[in-house]
Length: 491
Image (cartoon, rainbow, N blue to C red; front, top):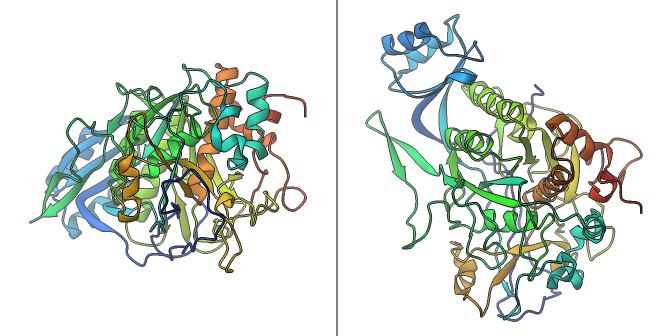
């Protein structure tokens, strides 16, 4: 594993940008977006310890007995990958466990924010009275050029050739949930397969207690998005093509909620979401527009990284490709001891590109993490500049805004009214780039249902456009994705 620089930090600097008007018009005035700095905190302990056994396919009776002897209680066990979650272990017990020939690594789980501080203005209102559209090319914001990402990635060429994805292809959005009632997403989410793992575990007097993390409105499913992020991501993958076009509009979405309305969650919660998506939910593609930068040398971190590696490799064995965001801290992941997770454990890790003042659509985003040891491909994530007047709204990515958005400056999205008005937000980040790649994976899978995870990965990498330095480079590696090339559509 490549080792990198210091500290936990936020990965997705999604920037929801809005105008105070309820008009459909898009402001061309630049909006100030601040990028979050690395967090110096290592998260809040959950009261549970991740025990990773050397046996990658079972947990022995001797291993369980050792934990009990040391005063621990096995709360959850994933025998098939050799991982257990344990409560009640003292510091000395952790040391004894780590010294055992049965154990590979031990580390305390922690809660951290897997999403960034979000710079919010307000939202734009889509036109009222519009109906779901079978042709994504007729979606309002694609037609007027706002959704430039669908053009530069070849998605519009794929649509014209009849590739829209199929219902049998399933994409899990592991995130803050999905607003399944937004007009762009209504009918696209498999509710029977969707689930929430967004409860936190707090330590009270040494006892781990599961605690619900947010109130739900009456009638809301547990996987409702009370943040905005998951809904924005989901509608980039698939939508009803009313105001925004979905990359692969006909595929089935699965809401797997692992983060709270504040964007926080535990490693156990994120890992549980991956296992659910690849297992019971039967997802072909997992999209994780989330992550953290962690110091590989910090005590216990190696166990958390190995946990992520094992659950992702297990998902791949089940036929699920895992696509994750690179992060937005402008970190060179080729140097130092910082590891970007789950980016560096995933099948494909995605960096971001985007224009400034609608010029050079394939330049690297100012905020994106980079490094040829971590990044596989790039995709449109939107771009921003610290220079006053250095960018416009349309340099970013527009998508659906949840009707339950929790940010005070996104409260306007709560004014979504069936049949009257729905809101959309602009955002920038590798969070926004990742669903373009997940959409491409879903499109290729729909056209080639028997393709393997390895075949799908190779199809995405080797069809990408070389848009930076000639050959593979540290910002885009194999290049910026091109789904039309991947599908064999002639220019």
